[in-house]
Length: 165
Image (tube, rainbow, N blue to C red; front, top):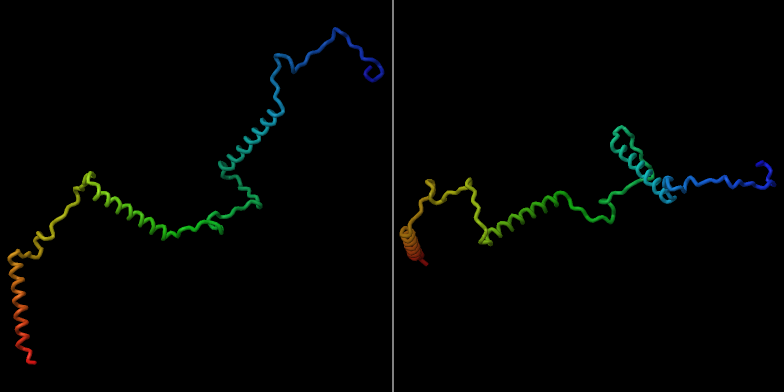
């Protein structure tokens, strides 16, 4: 009866159907956009899994695309000039010296800063040590100056007598 297209369709009013998808107890269906987004999320997760296994599996060979290349950021023509190691070391030493000098200057200029003394550091007098040269008293220094002045006068007198011109 299906083969005869000229035959009219007979419908029995007692026969009916209902939609499987629109019933209240039906599962929610996702839209096309949601299905596309879910597929994209799953594809991203698969790529991340592959990347993670690339890093974690040491036996996996490295695949390199010959079209991929890089250039050195530091050796390009427009790169900033880099400092040589010896100049960098010298600059670091100079800056360290400057820091030490600044700290020393603030130690002297800040009167509220306490003086820190290391008990292991000590000094001794250069002048009072047993092997020091003997120092002369004020009277001895004056007497020596007087003797030298007298010797200079005697020298002048002797040269006056020795000159026959």
